[in-house]
Length: 220
Image (cartoon, rainbow, N blue to C red; front, side, top):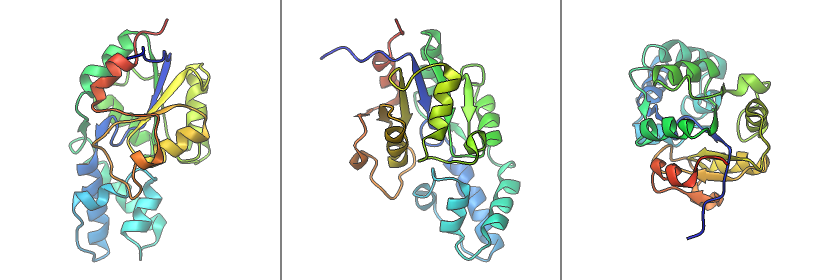
């Protein structure tokens, strides 16, 4: 087997890649649905719509509500459940600190409202590891698959698109990385999405998050 390509930086999606926040997302989604007289949805259904930004989640799962009002109700409720309902994905707690020890530059690019992401990254003990934690608010509201967040991440890390890898879990992550001309790998077991992630043709699909330990050796 040939040696893995050397990267000096990695940008990560958050929900479904670094963290399993679907319990919290489902709870807040069902809180909003209940406020409009709708029955609760199982987590497996909600997972299919995560990753495209909160307005889209509300439009799809609370379709008859005013989107702005539904988003506000979600955010008001979410603060009460997001910490208790979020945990690191398997392998992340061991892998991310080791990559940092090796000198890899790292950032987070998530469609979640950025102050929620930053609070969760801190609560999960990773705040000192990531150079930047970005959301749509950092790039004029342009959510993925717009590549603006990746471009901003590359700028903050001080690297070019050929020096970095983007790691996500959904087809939208592949489309985002392709638009930024950045190689993309997918981890399994996060959000499901309505489009097959592997059919989007990522450069690699990891069997586990810990695969990054041999795929991302210490930068030269």
